[in-house]
Length: 518
Image (cartoon, rainbow, N blue to C red; front, side, top):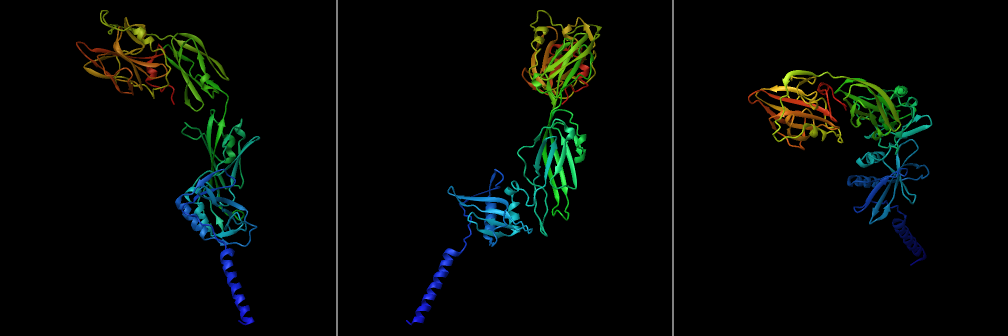
């Protein structure tokens, strides 16, 4: 072989080696997602990981396959999110997604070795708005934030409404919501008259709505500048919802709506309310305490009669009942943790008219019987909660013959304020309200009787039944059948009575008012 031929041969061999070397060692090999890889995604500034679904893994794989090598690696510092793919417990792929800061809103994927690849915006936005990532990431433009301030206290929130949609129109991003929320959303200022809102970018309109669980209407509704009118009625955790809207301007290239949500913990001084300070024997008074620090510590003391336990009627509102037994003027004292107050109440004598008819439900002494007095004393307690709902119903629909201010000759005082019917034929007796049957039996004064406990020490009694249709322990609702009254030779007498911790009550109020409403 001539010298020139040798040179040509060496040149060809070196060229082939260069080509092979370039193919084997010089070419950038893009990482691929395999079937057995477990792919997770997160933000570096948030301690959360989301696992990609199969559909999202396929979408991410399609995006990676469309990467194009970028030359400049110095400007990709606007971090969006990070991916990590694991195979057999070993991390094999860890790219990070960045947004270009040159105003084009394009994206680039960087790898730990420094390799950078450009990405088409359409594919990236499709991935960012997929089901999993829609619950995880802020929108691509700088997110408007809201700061709630009161004195030295402040709380900054990102937008918390979901449903982000991205639209690429002339390099503008349009926003409709985002799912990023600060860990703490509870603000506890002492004076809510100084509450104020501010935004990182001023919106064109702001609507603020503050509501309290258990209240049908908002406690406050208005603009951000009207928050000085927010006057919380009671202590409790209020829900504040702020809707801010932006429109595109020359300085801001996005438009849309953000909804912010946070809780306001309101603490107000306790207040004692006794709406009515005068009643008659057998009447019920409601005592209400607003904003008690420790509702379990509340107690009432009054020698006028018997009081029941406090129950929660609404957020920050607790009430109890007082049954007036003795006529006179009394001091009502309410106490509890950081609660102390007194109120004078007047109990007037209840006049009971005796009618010229003998008491009809006196059981013969020789018959097997239970003592009315001993039986009622068994039910002076009221450890359970409130069962009844709404007003109490009459057990018979027609008008009674004798009302609570009337009594038979020889009627026991334990049956004071009993309402009486005279029944012809056969009638079914219904429960006055929701409760539990606690007694079924024949009494020495009252005949066959049924007692229903409606909670909190409030009982209704049904006297003079011919037949009982319920057993002790049965739960009943308003207008459920309790028993039957039948006429025999003469019209039968049937009576009903309400008793609160052993105090006979005026039924007219139970039939017209919803006690402890709520």
